[in-house]
Image (cartoon, rainbow, N blue to C red; front, side):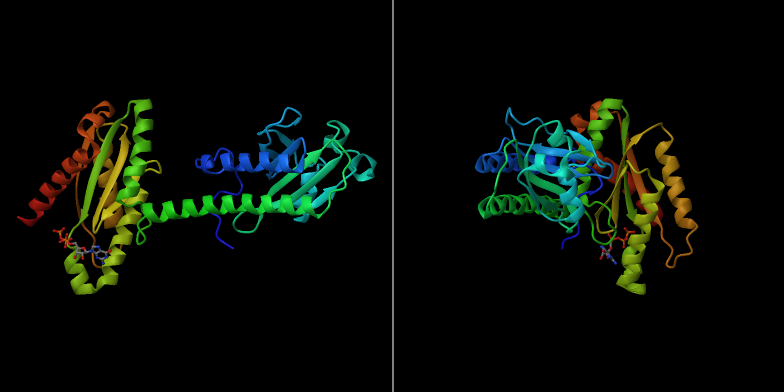
Length: 325
Ligand SMILES: Nc1nc2c(ncn2[C@@H]2O[C@H](COP(=O)(O)OP(=O)(O)OP(=O)(O)O)[C@@H](O)[C@H]2O)c(=O)[nH]1
């Protein structure tokens, strides 16, 4: 079983990548209902205290639409499937005593239910995929196999989404420090610029370069150099806010981008970082050079992100140059 990178405690509709999944699921459910000749077909997600229709086939006869929810303590068919993690077929619900308090039967008039459990990539139960009919039925193997195949296809789509998230995470992150890498920085920067545009906040970019990493590697070994990089990355992450973009740009260079709340914001942050690093009893001692540039959000597009990073890099080199004099 694969590790599930999709948050399983949240509704899948509303995930920022749900557009990679829901349109395909919609086509699957439409086709499943059509092939089974039923007025209603669904993918339902089980939440902590509610069940939610994620996909409903597009038919005028179907009383439920996507996003409809029902409390988890109501005796609906899907609840049984989820609780037992096993298929359920009911061909004549009105004549079964256990379904008399099921509103799908007593209020909506459904008589038939065929549902299979649908699983997250880690094997835990996501919810169900099912068809429902107002008629009494006697489904044979053909119907069971059909819905089971659609379940397998729906699960494969979830696995694909999971792999997509994994690949993106690998492509956008630096393995050693777990910070976003250069690619991840530019991806996240786009989002940050959008939110800064709304608030009209100024943007600040700060370029950091660790001093003397080469002699540290040469004298203490590459592992010590790695530890310096990891320790610096941790300190950097903890000095800035969660919403700021803290990236390892490459080698011993790090770039931070944030919305600046006031003129003293960045000098204060850098000072805080220096203090944090100074208090660490770490050998070899870590020191760094840095430079930053601040700019009004409306000027960012004119100047371009690359140019702003270069300005911050130039400032960093000035500081490094002074240390070497
Ligand atoms: N241990 C370790 N070293 C790395 C890594 N990435 C880059 N380096 C080393 O970092 C060093 C960077 O060298 P320079 O850019 O010359 O910088 P420096 O020695 O820090 O010197 P100044 O920047 O001038 O202070 C090189 O020796 C790289 O091999 C890494 O992932 N781990």
